[in-house]
Image (cartoon, rainbow, N blue to C red; front, side, top):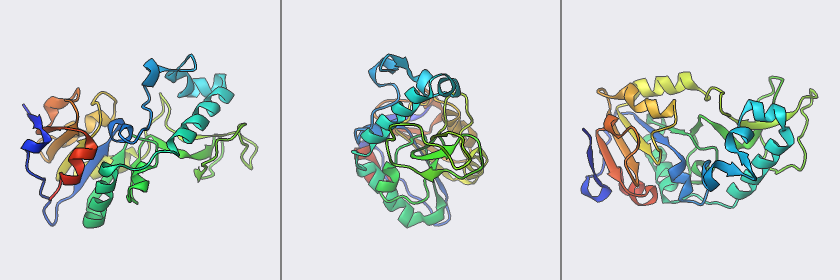
Length: 240
């Protein structure tokens, strides 16, 4: 069973000079900056279920609606700023360098605004787009376009987002980082969304496993410690 309690009852985490840290962040850390979570408004957006505007099937059936949804998400996310937790993780990267692997389920750019430069966005990036057909790499795209743009090849441009039914990005790199880590920390996740919810099980028994969030996650039993509190309060003092 994990040790569960208020974050103030735990000492800061010490990272040894050769230890590697894997940090996974979820919607909770961004919600503290005002990012609307994927399930706001009961899972509906303008009478559409989120699965209808965040799936290949939705894109095929009504692409203009999907594009408008992500345009509105871009406009809203652009007004949000990094909070204390994002900034603390940026400072941790400065201290640890490539011994820190920061993986996020979030598609916003708040980690980058907080100073992180190596963030792996496993579910894609809101402020990037890509061609739905050709091999052109994803590109920065911060505009809430009124109409769906076209690639130079003639195909439509789509949001650089991992939709329901698609495989998260960089799973092999994530597996390598999990295998190499000595300390695994999850911040602001529900423990209900896979495959990310299974990462802690992949390192259990080999690495220390720490959860940070306002309440216990669905997979709480897999962690060594559950440090309860808001990310913006906990993360600045989480590491020595």
